[in-house]
Image 1 (cartoon, rainbow, N blue to C red):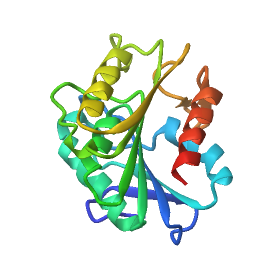
Image 2 (image 1 turned 180 degrees about the vertical axis):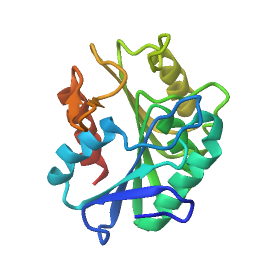
Image 3 (image 1 turned 45 degrees about the vertical axis):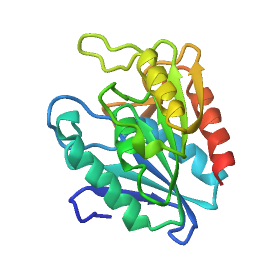
Length: 211
């Protein structure tokens, strides 16, 4: 499904569902064409059958770059509006955490669930006031030369800032977890990373709370 911004939306489940899980991907410095997130796709494939009362919507940005963060936020807002659910949970991976926070001021958004979320100090967390922030972060996550990553300390500091603003929340460190849940092989096949089943269980826990 093409959004008005030019981004793409992939739907799993019924658009008549009263509650939606809108999934937004990570990014990079270079301004490259958006892709589907392997981590989010892996989770949706496994969790959607367990939550038939939720509609899952994966966003493919026009450009997946933090140097075009406003564009990514516009794409996420367009996805939330297109689904039009009464209640929305934003599931953001890496840079998608910042996109989700920026989008959380939409009236339908109740929860932001960040997976290894990139939440820099300069990011305003005001949209999370009186909402819920659940953070899941791999304990081994690190940014290395040529390898994307987000140190857990960044998301923990942001989580504490959000609580100080009045957000509700929970922070979970995934022991031995890396940056992400799955990778995509050149063939297109999804390859689960270590602790993928733990990530899935924790996301399912939050979806159970949300539904």
